[in-house]
Structure formats: structure tokens, C-alpha cells
Length: 267
Image (tube, rainbow, N blue to C red; front, side, top):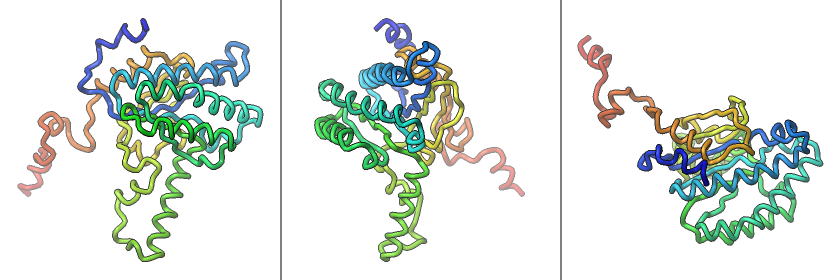
């Protein structure tokens, strides 16, 4: 694709994010600007999913998490919800053979039991068909919200404490992380939101504590390979300090005292 080749040479292939998460926003507005039905915008958004999944796989990115349908989206008009559910099932059926061919493994995050039975069957078939794939891990968040996830994790931990399997003093950050939907998966290095909004909308709140955030006005159906590469280039131009100073990061030494440490030591 031309847009892929225009900027891909600008990427440092040794510094790509291991895990990219995307809030795919703007399908409805894309359709409205064209006097189309919102469902047509969602259908067009599937093309962007295919593009970005394929490019992520080609680049060697290991994890791609897509916010496809939030818990709050159940509040939308029933006709739109029904259309989305149909689109999700149809897309998984259609794309699974290509995912297998491209060695992409499907993971499902969220309250999957709330989805219609036919959609669940399509999703489970896709997950089963790709279970042996070892390339890109494609995490699809459906009926997902981070507050639901954290509440669910708290319940599981409370149950272990109640059953004397775990003492309150033993609860650590690792304990909580192990009870999340993303247990065993590295936190996102980069979170992208399309559509011009500047919030993360109840998405991976725990996991994105140190993620680099990238907001773009590009609506999701228009988010092409070039737009994705722009986000990756922006990520590579940032310094990730994780609470350290720039000097510590530059020398790779987390223990070297800062100037204030030296000053305090002399008091």
C-alpha cells in the first residue's frame, strides 16, 4: 500500500512498542458527515481494523488491543446495538481464515456472556481457530469497561481472603494484576485514541498507568497505515522515564543518586 510505504522507513524497527491499545472512535461522526447511517460508519471502521491489524502483524508488534464495544455502549439505540452485534459476528467469521493465515491469535476481553449467543459462537470459533497462532496477539474488548474489570478483580481477591487463601497483607500490585482480564499480558506501551476526544473512557485504567497517550482528530474509518505510523513515530520521539530522571534513563542506571539526593546526604 502506498500510504504504508511513504513513512515506514522513518520507523526505528528496534524501538517499536510491544503492545499498542486503540480506542476506535469516530465511526458515527464519519457516517453523519456523509449523510449515511451510523451502522455504515461502523462497517467502514472494519476496514481500518483490518489495515491496522495487518500492519501491526507485519511490523512484528506482539500485542494489539482494540476497544470494540464498551459496557456503556449497551445504552445506545437498540437498532445500533443490533447492527453492531451483527457486524461483529460477521466480521469474525469473514476474517478468521486470514487471521490464521497471518498467524494472528484472537483474545477476548470483557463480559462476553452478555453478547448474543450467535455472536458468542462466532467469537469462540475464531478464538479456537487461532489458538495455535504465535504471531500478533489481537485482544478484542467487547462489553468491556475498566471499572467492571477492577470490580471483578476485587471480588475475586475478597473471595480468596474470605476463604483464607490470601491474607490482606499479602495483596500486592501483582495480586491485582493477576486477576485482571489481561493477566500475563504486558501493559500497553502506547494508547491511541482516534476521533479527536482527549479521554480514555474507562479503558484499561490500571494497565495504562504508564502508557504513552496519543490523541488524533482522525476519525477511525480514516485511520490508515500512514496515520498509524505517525503515532508510532511520535511514540519513538518520547522519553519514557517511569518516575526516573532523564539522566538516569540516558545511562540506564536506576540507582544513581540525583543532585537532591546528594544534597540531602550532606545535611
